Image 1 (cartoon, rainbow, N blue to C red):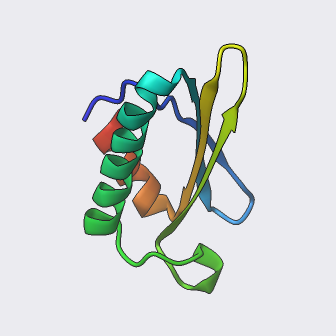
Image 2: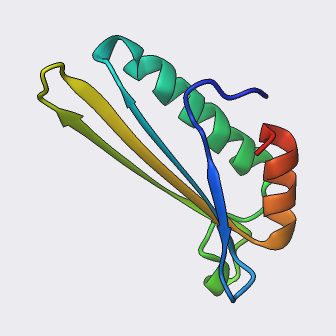
Amino acid sequence: MSLRWLDFDYSEGDDDVGVFDALASVLPEHADAVRAEIDAVLAWAQAEGGRRAPVEEGGDWDAELQQSQDAGPPARHEFGLTISGTAAFCEAFRSRFSV
């Protein structure tokens, strides 16, 4: 799946947990498209990524989504999506989303 709105950066900690971070800041008319892309990424992770829970608690992956609105001008919708996971999850994520 090619991502249009989310551009993920990858980092890895000393604990072998990988972290994908993406930020999107869009005009209101594009907010639904960003939400749909986030939903698609999370649906894939839910279906293919194993158990959702923090890795340190035995999970394979977990995610945090932050959303806000900036009054502007121009008004913008801002999204921050962080996904963390095991090495196996991260490899599958990179393969699926070309990150």
